[in-house]
Length: 260
Image 1 (cartoon, helix red, strand yellow):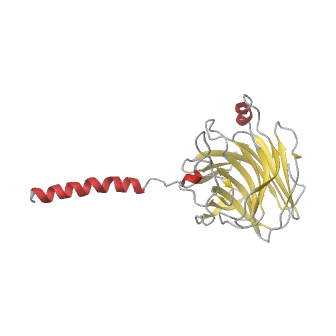
Image 2 (cartoon, helix red, strand yellow; image 1 turned 135 degrees about the vertical axis):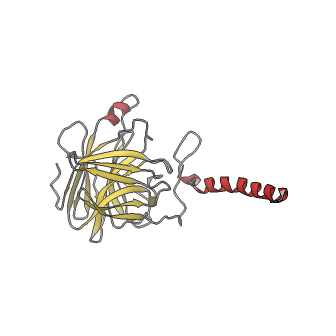
Image 3 (cartoon, helix red, strand yellow; image 1 turned 45 degrees about the vertical axis):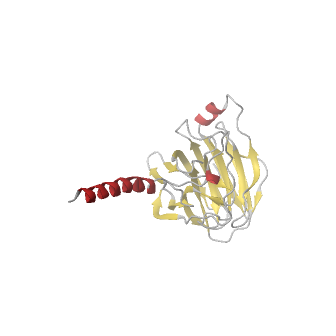
C-alpha cells in the first residue's frame, strides 16, 4: 500500500474513534440540568417528549415497570421476596413541570386505593432533590395526568398533581425539609409514606418516627378515567446519573381506609 494511502487511512481511523465515543455520550438539554449556584432548571420546551419504554412481566406485587420519559440512562429494578424490598435504580431530570423521567413499577387498577411504603436512600451522597414517589397515573406517557406523594432526599414531602395531560404540576400539601444540620439524620432513617384515593379525592399520609400513618395537609382533587395505573417510582433528579432507592413493606389495597 502506498504511503499516501496509509496516511489517509490513519487520518480516517483517528477521526472515527472520537465520533464513536461521542455517539455513546448521553446528550442532556441545558434546561434539564439540575439547579446549582450558576444554573436554574427550567420547564422543558412545550413540544419536548421521549417515548416511555415499558418492560412487561411481574415484579413483586406489580404487573410491569417502565422508564417513564426514557431518561438518557436506562433504569432498572429488582425485588427480594424474602425481605420484600424493591431496589430501584433511576436517572431522570425530574418528576415535575409538564413531563416526567423516572423508573415506575406499576399495575392497572380501578376504584378506591390505599398505597403505603417505607422509603430509604442507601446512597448518602445523592442529589438532595431526588425523590421516591407513590403515584397514580392515567397512562404511561411522560406527560400523564397524575397524583403523587413524594419523599425527597433532602426530606421535603409533598402531595402534588398534574391536573391535565401536558399541564404543569401543582402542589396541594407540603411538609418542609429539616433545617440545616438535621437533614443527614432525617435522610438516613426510613420514612413511611402513603397515598389514599377515595373517589376523586387523594390524601397524603406520613409516618416520620414510627408512629401510625396519619393524614397531613390539604387533599387533591382529580378525576381519572378507569382503569389507571398505580405504583412506586424513583428519580435521581440528575438527567444522566443513576441513583438508588429502597422501597419496602409495600401495602396496596383496592379500597380506601386500608393504610397500615
